[in-house]
Length: 230
Length: 250
Image (cartoon, rainbow over all chains, first blue to last red; front, side, top):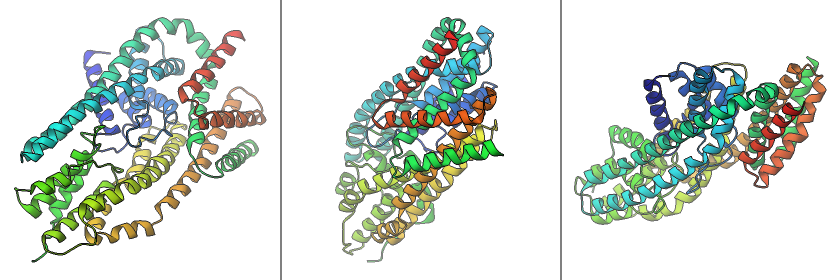
């Protein structure tokens, strides 16, 4: 990977990060979209798709309600994709085991996203005061500028999270990959499916609907029987 | 005095500005700047460049609702402002209306969009992705954004045209019931996805599909743990460490 690739990935990190709260919210921030998009700009959309699949359901049940800040699954997806593509070249590894390792290393680092997001919102507290003062003095143009400056806080918070995930993740992956790649390859498909199943279970546990267990069990059993008997 | 009407161009500008509602989201007054920014083209049309101080004050105070419902609130707020400037006495003034509806609409929007449409679209996308198709993100985006973008636009026009009656119209749509139906569909799709993965896992390990049923209590146990507040991060660490340990031992 060249410097230009990292810059492009940084741009994707900011754009998708803005989509989480501050801008548009058309859900390009979801791992299922953000990761393949990152993979695509780095020339390997399939790696991104694999990362997105593993991460999509993990925090889907955590709603961005009011002042609650869910874990930054967007930057975990972007960072894990960059890790999988860049470290694949460096360590001469590829395939699902490397994707799984990258995701497993990126997931805990996603905690930094919550810290930076909170920081961005505190910066916006000051912007809000300045914007309000500008409005009260009749300076509408300044008010609009202060409001739009808030985008910069969110974009920088997203970029900072992605940079930390990639830098710390690369360092950890460089030492961990040779030790664990064999075991991950051995566990292979079970590990891949289990990550998706953990996500599904988390969503099921937080979906808060009556009869969810009966509906889930009926759908699971019915599908298994159809697949088994066909 | 003749009532001032907003043009379609102003509606379009408000619609586009609704995408920037949360640009300066802050802990103190949440979407306060965003809401004023959203209705600014309408206020300029109603009051001219010199928007009165009391109008500026009341529309830049604490505000928080679901971002997709904000255009609906904006439409009604602007209509109430036009009614009051043209000498009519609306049943409720714009500020009281905002304070009355923002929290219920936020709860409705969270349940419908974050809790209903988004997980359902994501699961359909995941099922497509599990077939190795790169169309999955696009399908997810289309499924989610068709109702989302329509809702913003219709909400804005509905709020302006029907003013206070827009809330009745929204109530008649029974959106909370729709959200529950969507969540139930999502639950069914979670079952389908888990069964498909369990079956594929057995097929790959050359085991009888009957072993796939073992996944059912495991997923239910994890769902119960998640329901009790155990974090996804802990569940991921528990699962991967167990599987890696098994792989290292055997």
